[in-house]
Length: 140
Image 1 (cartoon, rainbow, N blue to C red):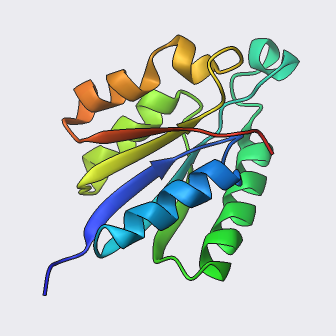
Image 2 (image 1 turned 90 degrees about the vertical axis):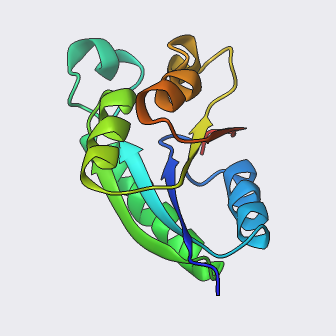
């Protein structure tokens, strides 16, 4: 029996998006896998400028809602956690302490995504050496 692939899913405002859920369903059809959800506590809007740590409560809300949604779908979720406000730092922290086989990074569409403006999917691939699937989701 093939071992389960360990997939780190990184999302914040797109955590409950249908696009990300579809991508995770598709991934499960490709072979056994176990997901870990990482929600960087990235604030947005005015909070971004005022307080880099202002996104914690919102990140926790996304984490809890998305975890419930994934379990309702019957997807194999190992863990769900809130990470550093800097999404690349959050990914590096998580990959330093746990082993993963691949990353799925979910962002808002290009014209509104702070993560795409800093080229997060490419930087995450460079920083971790893991294959990265980028999913564009709608905000919840």
